[in-house]
Amino acid sequence: MKIFILIFIASFNFFINELYAQQIDGKYVLANTGETKSELWLHSNGTYEWNLELSTQERFESFGVWSVLDGVVTLSAQKPSIKTPSYFIDKATWILPWNFGVEKSIQDQLYESAVEKSIALCPFSDMTEYAFAAPEIAEKKLSLPVLKKRANTALQKLIKYKRIFEIKAKNAIRIGTRAAYDEALVANEHFQVAWNEVKQSHWDAHLAIPNKPEVVFPLECHVPKKVQIDENNPKLWSKKGVGFEFYDPKKKSHVNGILAEVLFSDGSKKRVSSRIAATMIEDNQQVIGVLLSSKGIYEDEPYYLEVNGVIAGNIYQINVDSDQVVPPIFETFVLSIKEDGLESVLLGGMYRK
Image 1 (cartoon, rainbow, N blue to C red):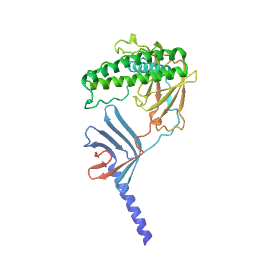
Image 2 (tube, helix red, strand yellow; image 1 turned 45 degrees about the horizontal axis):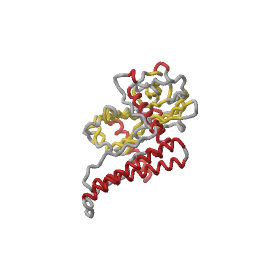
Image 3 (tube, rainbow, N blue to C red; image 1 turned 60 degrees about the vertical axis):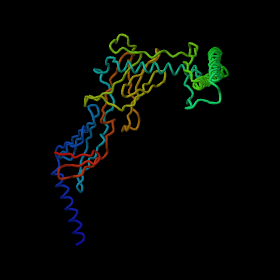
């Protein structure tokens, strides 16, 4: 008798779940969530299509199977089976014209490279100011004339240390020894401390704080000014690099989240941004391939894509099967069956037919 009851209950639950499934398939739209838009298709064959749009530029999609159990609909995203390469090249769309976004990225990299080279050659040239907090109440023990005299002495001391710093910096570049570099670093410290003393003494004497003297470094330490790019004058663009664009031809959309490393013939690598995938190229460098991967990628190892004939001044389109490299936004998504639709606690709204 007990076994019969258990079989009856299991059969009844199965019947209820099947009845739910027959009643709830169809298209749903998320309601009462402001600007957030979402659609859900529960197909009668047990598969689903789902999308979520947070803005015109942020859209997510998911595909898989759905099931019903005890008044709950569960969407289970399915990982695609990988049978073809995730990344590939189409010669018809391989070369794209240069654009302002890539040019700006290249110029930023050129400037950052110049700064890095300058710091590496002249580590003593870091002019970041030491912390200084002016007191709320000036010193009361000394008279104002004495405080003004002290401020003038501090200023003369600063000028002296500036000259010493410039000499030590020049010697460091000329001699090139560790001892010479250390002396320049110490001279920088003395100059910075003297500058703080000038600010403090002028504050105490109720005097305007003078401009900080500019230290004249050797030419080798100079960083070129950042180039201001004219977006409307492409003829002045440098084109000192290459760009890569990741595109899904099936979905006809750009793909974000790709991690790329450009490989050069000399064995060096340069990681590029997936938003504007561009890298500068030295005169003697030749691109031989791109190492591609993605956060949450299904392949165990990054994918190596060999490239030929890549030259500076072009953008190259790498086609991506984003279903294979971009992980689903969720593995499972739970919805509660209500009288007026499917409730999502996560999104704070109701899907209605």
